[in-house]
Length: 177
Image (tube, rainbow, N blue to C red):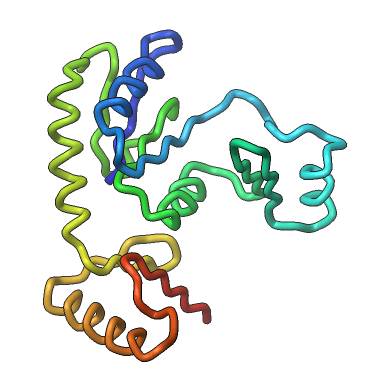
């Protein structure tokens, strides 16, 4: 599920998201924030130099965080990357044109009933968590019915149970052509 937060500069978007995140503590939430800056990574830094030399992305690991710098750009690329982390909810903040996302759009100046938004988010999160199988093809979620979902789920679980280490709560399978 994706929620897009819109509003003018200094309208309270960040504060609204913070409150929503506090209410959703314990769920896997990813926030995608737009920036007015051309780049975040600094020219001359190792991570910047690696990408200039041809790396698709560079990751820096600090004591308390991991930062990924990618040469790809655009909201659709960021959402596709976020989906690979299998979040319960993605919150998009600061983008003007989010209508094409086909998601819940919240205008902070108009709608500020955080409890209502929380309830809506929880309904969607619960619906999403009921899915046993989620398939993405080229970054887009493939719509599958319950019958197909059960076939995938039972077949994959049976095949993986034969492999050492094949048991688990969350299993990711990537197929490349």
